[in-house]
Image (tube, rainbow, N blue to C red):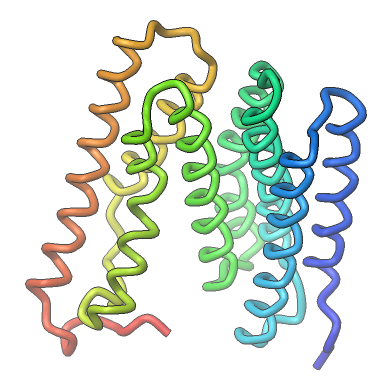
Length: 236
């Protein structure tokens, strides 16, 4: 069994190099560097732990695609943090986010085509998506108000509730609508970040996206409540 996993280490190096490129081109400041480096280090540590825990030797083909997305999410994180102390690089942030959203459909396709789908890869993909939504909601909240944070934070509230309520930790059945709602949040938040839509109209669109998210999470919570543990598989 290999003790060294190169995937997280390569990802960390890519994060640092990409942050250096941003610093030279648009500038990051201390806040951008702190957020970007913090994200990069935590990501590398968590991925290494995940690989060891699952017994995986290293990244598969699809995981490398997700790693590229993770690096892009790190750049969005750094730019969002930098926006608190300097004029935001809106065009760059939106462009990077669009690429990250487009790549979201690629890693699953690669996993299926190469027969390398895994629980680790699925979780890596999900966490990258969730954190991107959280960061985008933080960015949008600067102009739209703190209530927008509910979009990015709802998934983490759901996970935290599972720590307190064992019946919420069970595995949910696949549901296509859940994926549609998640994709909608990303699109709406990147439009909000672009600033192309008037504030009042954008607030209505964001409220609609939040309503969809509440409905989706509410349906999942109801399903978990109605199905006893013996009828579902516990999450490892």
